Image (cartoon, rainbow, N blue to C red):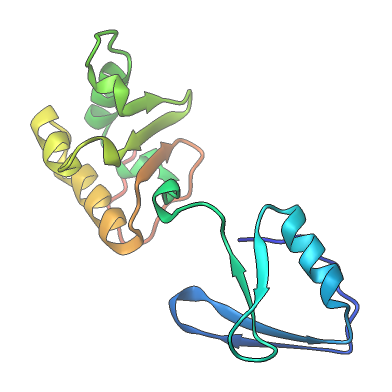
Length: 163
């Protein structure tokens, strides 16, 4: 979460917690101003059980969030690219274009559309390198969407294909 906030404070203390959370102690600002900025961004701010500890809550349920990773199409083979292009342009009622979308410079793979998306990619004929990339992104980052983009970043530790 990013909050645009200009703070004029005496001191700011930030403490790293587990699961990517932080605790922020800000001296010298009005609490009402901080709460207004947070609320204007669609979040809620409340004082936690411990005095002085503030907690930011997201009003959306966890199932409404989908993690997305964008990376370069250099991680897939030319054959994968051709196959994804064909699959994303199907005009059937229940074709692969329901979960594989062409973006103009790459593809969006909505992995939640199948119970076992990597097995589905294998049955469709995608390369082992492509499937390995998807498996790693799912396991390491709990990715629900993979955006393979020609302008995306090349990720370290994965195969790169020059096509």
